[in-house]
Amino acid sequence: MYKTISPVLFTIFNRPDTTQLVFEKIREFKPSKLYIAADGPRADREGEDALCRETRGVINVDWDCEVQYLYRSENLGCKLGMSGAIKWFFENEPEGIVLEDDCLPGEDFFRFCDTLLEKYRDDTRVAHIAGTRMTLNDKFGDATYYFSKYTHIWGWASWRRVWKNYDENLTMKDSFVQQDLFKYIYSKKKITDRLTKVLTLVETGGINTWDFQYLFMNFWNNSLCICPNVNLISNIGFDPRATHTRDKNNKFANIPLETFTDIVHPKFFVPILDADYCILKLEEEDTLTILKSKVKHAIKLGLRALGVRKAGIQKLKNLIP
Image (cartoon, rainbow, N blue to C red; front, side):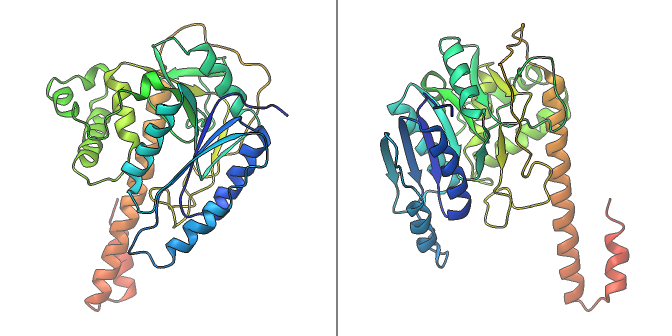
């Protein structure tokens, strides 16, 4: 069994079942340094304190390993809880692997990260190593991975040199947009408009998250992100308990894990925009499906409150594109 050489950050919260599955995989690859970060329970969620305790109880490091813990008593939320844990990790380590409690790694994920963390350690063109193949069945190029402008965070690795520029408050966003610099990232205005809207929602608190700030940081640094042509992470956390991934029928849920033999490196340092456009289209389709479902549900509830019969509701729902 391969033994990972990189430090690992494992972030957990209130799901003991998925945490157990991911931790068992970490145990198989026996990192010599393991950082465990856990956000605290939300005060308004009955029983969550017990779930958080149960989840923390899953952690049982029974191999030769230096373990550090960051267990919070109060809830900071996705934005500050997760970004704070990653900052803590990179304050202590110059590079490493980050896994959340629903990101199940495959057999070759740790070897992939170890190899590329070393290869690109001092290459400032490269900022991020992703573990998930978000293009689903599509592959780009004949190497084990390709370069992208987009940052995927379901199982990943990076360096302190990258994370030191992270800004959870997006203070550079307005200037970046005002100077119309997004057009140099992606030429399709529909995409850059959507990214701008999402970043504005994050900036103003409409979305409580940490990852779009990381994505934007790599945009304005013109950084390259490594994306695998084989899927090395499966997100097993699509259920109602999740913060952002609640639809178990989502096309990105439980993507089958794959393996590779030797790592074949790309010959050219060129971001494959067709791959990014493919992923952005798939994400847009999911967003539209979710919005359509919510609108139909709202109409259904509203019309029932007004006494409209079931047949009439169905006719109106069918009119929604």
